[in-house]
Length: 220
Image 1 (cartoon, rainbow, N blue to C red):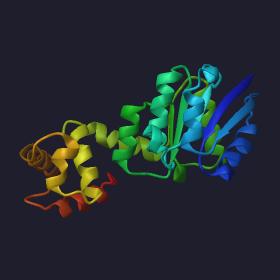
Image 2 (image 1 turned 90 degrees about the horizontal axis):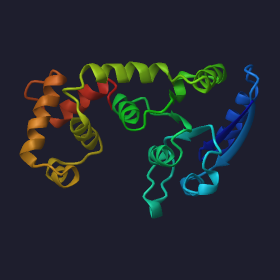
Image 3 (image 1 turned 60 degrees about the vertical axis):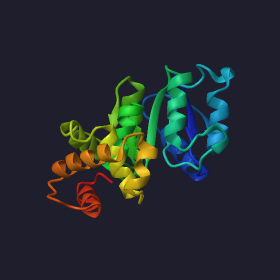
């Protein structure tokens, strides 16, 4: 059986490494790969009708230089395109990010069949994940499982808007700029910050306190 894979990563050596590892699988699969080294090339493949139904699996690195002409900011946007154009293709997203909010948002938005933090796995781990995903199941690495489980247990506190507020604070965005970005009033943002502080067990704290506690919990 041949497994056809599109590998999207801006580091050619990383793609070559994945190809070598997957070629050593004990499942009897032949591996046929196509490489895309940037978002522009990946966009052209994903949106080309000629490639519809060609790939069984797509490996996508989350951190990629953007393709601004088509508003593709990262591997996350490419994953959305894959879902739109190739709904039957399985997605494995690989990232260096271990922040719980980033991982949680990927699960909620993309629901990839595989989501793996690079520090969680080696060659054997990649082969294990590959076998599980090809068999029709999902595989999330340990850091993903831990972070997502924590946020799911507190979902009513950290809904999508509250998570976005925390991420904006982490980027140094000031309160007066947030209404234009989030589309809600300054007073609504302040109320949400109170909820965030309740979740983080902060009494009358500042934005810096929010960031300090969020970092302790691995949220950012």
